[in-house]
Image (cartoon, rainbow, N blue to C red; front, side):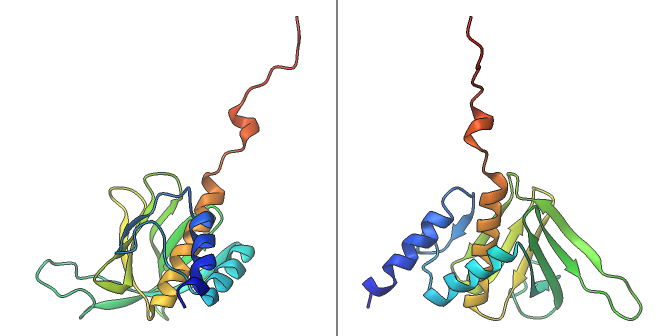
Length: 169
């Protein structure tokens, strides 16, 4: 049984190798992925722009139990250039962007060992948001899609790194 998912686990590590993601999970380097997660991630990466629905905990006091109480709906918009968390509009208010940023460092996503439904998106030292999703499957899809798009955003071609002169003297 262990060997049946080994290939997909290695694919996930290769896919996500170069992006800085701080994982506070017991499995360390990568997310152990089920084949259905990888299939969904690949489809979403091919689209290039995806929206996810999540919940945001607005009361972040240290005495409060995470995930209990003041959860508000958020839309996580992920595309090839940036990530954005939007508070949806209503009949009386327009949608409000809470955080927006590119995948450039120090951007990272944090996972939590004690809560498989929670993730934190950190754009920089002043812009971060804690999100909760319904399932671990959805959390894994979100993190892997962000990693895949961030890898494409941050990759630099070899030709731009190497300045090769073509004139001979």
